[in-house]
Length: 173
Image 1: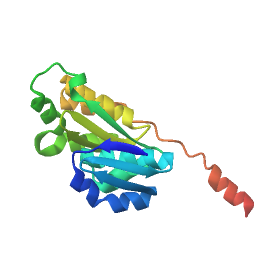
Image 2: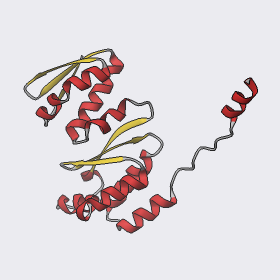
Image 3: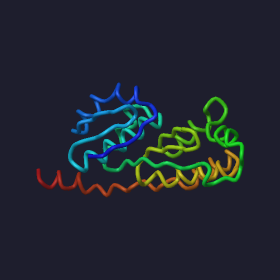
């Protein structure tokens, strides 16, 4: 049984039944404390999903964590800057009318949310490294245009399809 503290309890309770059905766990709450019961693997996944929901991610995005290749990572803004006014740093990550956050999502194929002094990222395990690096660069004060260039330059190579599946299908016929 895992127990965790959440800030957005009404939001979690609203999606409690869906999380229980999708992840095969039993969720109970006592004030702002949530307990999760089920198989160990399911408890871990439910904890990650609830943490993502509490962070502010939409339900459909938070549920991507249950897929094999998706992970949820958090970056503390305070760990990478000495600035006292963290509103400016958060503003740099969000951008005017949310444009920087949207551009990061498009370029990294990951999802971003900000909560207090942390940035949450949900994405494919192979793509999340670039997303983390981009956020760290923004926190450290790198211009957005330079971060975009970095991301464009460091796009992962697509996996080459050697056509083996098609070959096997043709050879069986």
